Length: 490
Image 1 (cartoon, rainbow, N blue to C red):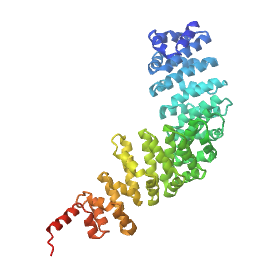
Image 2 (image 1 turned 30 degrees about the vertical axis):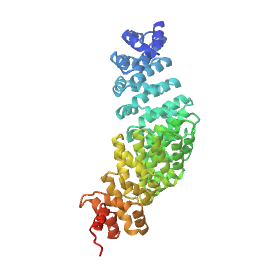
Image 3 (image 1 turned 90 degrees about the horizontal axis):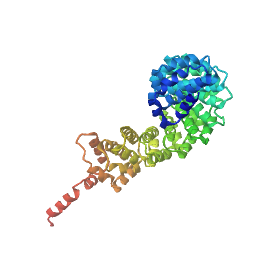
Image 4 (image 1 turned 60 degrees about the vertical axis):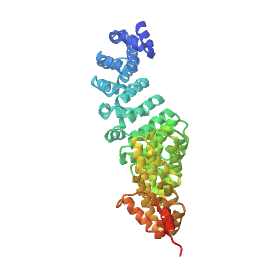
């Protein structure tokens, strides 16, 4: 007893792990797990669990020592303390990789754990649910094994137990099962999970709310019909109130849920917008930084992507200045890329939408991100795409003109193209184009004869009297001086 207790205590500290491993502690613990004294058995299991929890090699050593079948066989007959310790070992092994989780499944671990979910002791249920979650999170096949063993209805029953810790783990495990495929999510939904999860969104416990919103997001993300079922549980607008929750992960998971719902159809997006979802998410983006911003940024993009009315709703909610702020404050390239993507979804619909983006000074920013050699490939691609599609709609001249200078020709042709569309119909714009130096700049552009760019330049030039075009062409002043030299007064 003293031996297993000491090993269990030593295994709690990372610096001792290698020493214990080298001392061959695995082979010493294995026979003690079959000891006749229950307390020796469970402490030996606890020590093994702590070892396996530390790293992949030790977890593999547990599998190679053939300890798992032994654990699983003795699970049914033992007391609750042993069951908790055994479930802990299975969880510690399964967490490291899908191969190790697969070993737990092959040893019959899943069926034994599902039996533990029926135990009367809440601690045993909790340990079993936790281990099943660690198995299910790796991939769809392992999740399917957990579902096939009959875990889903028992996990939903665990949600209804009074213990908060058990509710949390049950919600977390359901989330891990749902995330892989629409079929797995549907299986969980068929057990009535949504109604029980929906009842807990206003629970005062922050950790429980995190898991509940996570599970609802994982269900919603797969399809319109699953998202609709989540909506029908009437969690909005109550869920939006949770964007004011003191816990940052509750706020992040609510935003993620909204993102997963709005992406499916304009109807679902309208529903969230009508509940006040846009303003709430934009406020949320003001109050957080980094990774926490990502779901909110994407949510605005998904709403705007559906149609021009929804994109206008984002603009009217002051979404564009907020995204502009995110772009300047965030340093991570994947967050910048998501922000650029959302700005594109807002700006590409009509000239009105493009103007809203241009007024915030975002066109030069997009150009800079596209031109910057240190930008990630994804960020460059998204910036180029956004710049092109917004430029093709933009008719707001004060924002277009700065883009005539120092831009690559593939972007320049879109800028000049816009001028060639606007100038023929707007005399005020033509005058401004001359006085601001725009016309002079266009004459200096070196375009290949017959290219798209040259055609745009020709159509701009045809909007002005010939002598004005000549006057602003490079070399005109030299030609005038030459005429002066050759001029003979009468």
